[in-house]
Length: 260
Length: 355
Image (tube, rainbow over all chains, first blue to last red):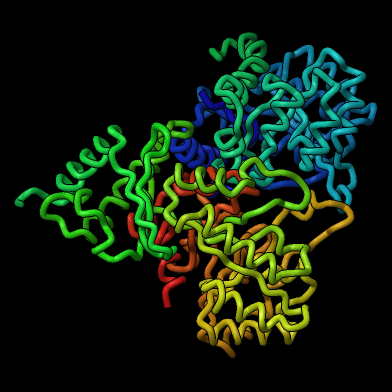
């Protein structure tokens, strides 16, 4: 069982969201991937207005509506616009089919503006994914580090939070999140550097490590290799490839009547 | 015999598997040449048939052939068949060990300066490559990045390949044209170590492809008919050690140089982290070869081959820095024709190294 935490409908050919997802599913089938979480949209804007992130989410809604058994939607929000983000959370998750929240680089996740979004997402049992990087040359404005995420995790100790890309510099990111048991490591979206997954499993435990690809910016191949190429027990491999994500998503899937 | 080649191959493979199970062949034909078949060996519970894609008919053990099938035809057909079997296997399934039809044009021996890689002991890496059906791997040395005594780095690399590679690993020494008397390092690579190519690290060594010494190096290497590999990058610049930032190589000057030295054979390795779009097409149009270690995006190989000729792209893993499986799984992610698959797995690399 392989569940992919992190795919985009950008970076793949197709005139419509549905076409793009259909194309992705054909490739995912070849790679043995059963289900995936889709983050919008067909293009990228780092600091989207409410109108723009709603448009992106509409694209995801269109795409996943066509493939409800394969694809789960994550709602893209911008914490700079708290009220609009909360409204979008209601539209896409509370009243819609989406099951998670995607936060990118518009605003540091350590900021207090995140709190109402996290609280409401937790009430809805939505899974929260926060992009993080720790770049040796410096982050983009608004881009969160793993340290930022741990501040948020401290304020919301009962809410599972996924540390997107584990900070990119994974040797740093793994150490940062290690004491925070509600923070999960996402393997997606970086080079398939050997040793990454072994360290994550060693330091965090396999239960806190989740496979994701970040296609279309990345390939399924390079990201799956982090799990299939790692020297870890088979039981850990299964957890990382799908069981951990399934466990996190099961409460909201059951709420929505979706069979995990 | 009137049976079809496919049936003959199938029968031949059954024969091989039976022999492996009985662990009866352990033919050690240590003839001292990295280009000849040296050993057929049982590899744990898998069987890894090592073969040399350039070996002549006389070197193929007669008892491994299908009756009535010429040795070369048998070998070539078996390579294709086993590669197809391996690539059809789902991730994590163990049958991946049975593909011998790969030439990995981008591996590195030794220690990455900033961390231990899980496969950085040469015997361990060799075992990994064999288990994944690699018939040949072109190796540079991590020591070449920062060591000043490049001559000893190259000697150790050659010795490491001889001692542990047993014909599998082909050494690619390094020349640093900013160093005094670098021309003799090139001579030693060619004449003393019988290397078929050199691997360059311009940005670790502090020169550009417009530096006159590099131009001279390219000319001398070409005169010796050596393949020149240029490592465009080794690590994502965003994760580099803050005290040692190394930007990717600017390949723009290369096109002009190749017009002046058309016989040069150049392969860019780890190129696609930063090299995309028109520069790739221009370089490919001037005969530059690439490999897939840093090729990303959905169906990356197929997408690239829609833009450049099939003969420009080789298999490369960047192991042990990268998980080897990354490159291998890319072969499955893209839908490729049989001829494209064969070209990437072996054919292009073989032609590149054989003048």
